[in-house]
Image (cartoon, rainbow, N blue to C red; front, top):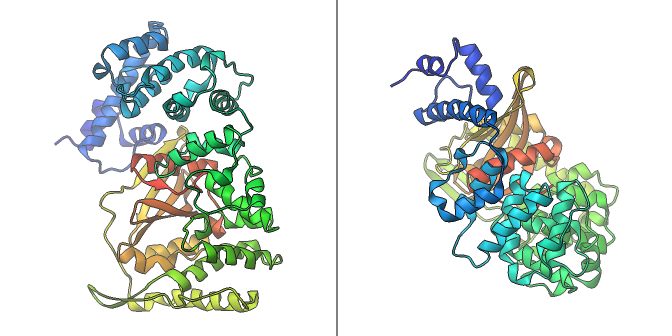
Length: 473
């Protein structure tokens, strides 16, 4: 078996330090222990870069029309590694992974790609190439041809918004509905696309098929006013909260909590809890997330009592009939503080450990080069000690998940960022046993920022993990 020294020398590096810096700059692990398949990827990367340089020097044209013609003739002979231009690589990757030549709208998609390559910047970005396939899948609902559309903005997001409305909407569709096409959550995106078309034909969202909860007339009105940054189902909660005279501050505090996951059985209590927060406007919004965690634990979370190794007693939730009627903020805060203190004593029974998830893997991604390089990591936390450390670093109560992790009800993952100055914890991620990301929280329960979202999205796509509808914070 080839040693690491032999490997890095074979691809042109004289010492490990130079090789390690190259790995960091190009998105490869800096570990001294690597599987053969990862070493092979590095070799292929070096070889491909040499080929790219040769092709670029030959001034070979970037011609999507010719590429699609050739691809239609023999798609099996093409792989996205074969193309030296980023655009052709992205198109080839999408075609090889998602497009079915047997679909009746296959030709419409191909023709649209050729047109958009000449008339827009939409093919410069992976997510639009993939989203356009979904737009093409509704070809029978198109009210105009793509050939009559012309971009009026250089911004690719605005171009995509304008194109989808040109094809599918006679009436105003709010910008957050773009997530119907851009959201990669297979559990929801077809439903959301139906709602996009429903609104675009002038119909009321209240009559849309498969709404998670019924909406009042006022909630439906506010739904259409939700911010462009909202996800589709987050906009539903926006409509409800604003129709109850709630505030934007409260909505921001609710992001990432259990209240952003719709469940028809639990919805009446969710409404009750929202009214409680609205009735207490002086509550520090930073306490909303922790309070919801505590209330959810008391009302819905089974309690797992460890008797001895391999023996666990499962008890019902402490307060399954919990109601918000008659409760005060002061009393509730005191109860939550006692709960947190109890969680802190959990280590008296010894550190709990559990196996790493068998089907979901850790993740590394490097951006930037040389001194500006940043290594992003997503790793599973596999002991109560690691959960406690995570909670202390980010100021939240993830330690409460120890029993659920040990019994396989969920798994907790940590997103961190490493630079030459050191490593910093950024976001804690909860995944349930159905492979859904339920929560993403940073320091003091903040939501992830745009960069953190993009890293988590790359990882979840690679590992085939779905993200709940409030993903697009």
